[in-house]
Image (cartoon, rainbow over all chains, first blue to last red; front, side, top):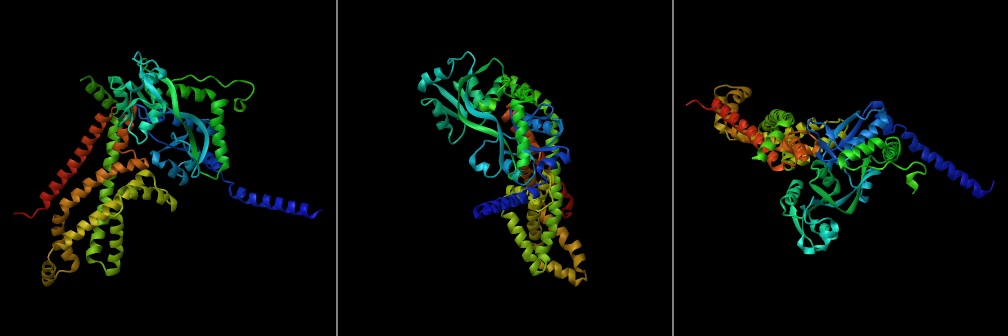
Length: 281
Length: 221
């Protein structure tokens, strides 16, 4: 046995031992805890359609809620075995780190800063800003809006970066800022604005609610990824949630995901191609 | 007019949700006022009659609580409770935070009311042979009560308004319920106005109740 070989064995043994210690203290993963408890504790909000909001009969619903239901179904074979923790956007990360929730799905944009505090799952949606036009209005699509230059007015939610955001897509457009989402829609409806710019999911929801009256201008920008979050340091649990979400977008639970997508965003999804896995394309 | 009927229809659909939110707001405020007032009376007594070290401790408590925004107290009672082991739900954590906040205010009000009574009253009570507890119950407390009732009513109304902050930790009180309804039907102005009206009604009722108690405890003329 050479000296360097012996050192190698020692290092290997030490590495195995050291990695075994945390592995042993990790024996009770959140996964086992949730299974033993018999229901999932999901953190989400209740005031943002179509992500998480209350139906007329006071039931929590939306795309975020459905992502949690997918995980609950993977856990218990029953998407309803969920205890909801109603939280504001500010509470998303603290509620994960203090164990108030097992999982948070609440249109959380993935950023480097947040990824230092919680572990993000795989993405389940990509958000972007879009433009909504009146059906049969003066401008047909994004190209027409852009060609019209400074004679178009865009209604947008009040924000520090609202002007910059609109000008990234329409450099010469006039920007009118409003206090709340219903007001930017009202501006479009009353003709004060030629198009409304906000999150594409919000636009899609509004268009689904008012069929035939509005249309998408067909341009999106400002991409951001939405993912669920779990507590850091529990790879088992993270893997489980990832697997559940992944199979909902590519495998056995695709119909669940696609139905939810159709309900909340009003679009049909093409089923994943059979044969070579879509992930490696 | 069309809009108004549309609002009434939405209001009808949401009637139970609003009532539910209102009952949460009322019960959380009531619990906070009751517990906060009981604790506050003790705080006030200690501040007026306690030994120096005890007064020092309670004075520290009051100054810290009164110098902290209610929102910070709410977040602290929700998150710190789980960090130290007893996991309070949003409702319990909310009651705790508001009760602590209430107790510090009531404590100061009680202290002020008691200290406003001239020392001659205590001396006179002593002269006719009353013990301290008799003096307190029959001479000092009834007078102090009249002093601090108006301010106490004001604090109670403050509690109702502070309860709106509990939506941050997910207590489904009236404001959060209203926001939930607005996120479904986009009628923000109408529903916020309606919620404001309900808050006014609750606080008006508290004020009337305060006036009633004031009349009952007034010195007969």
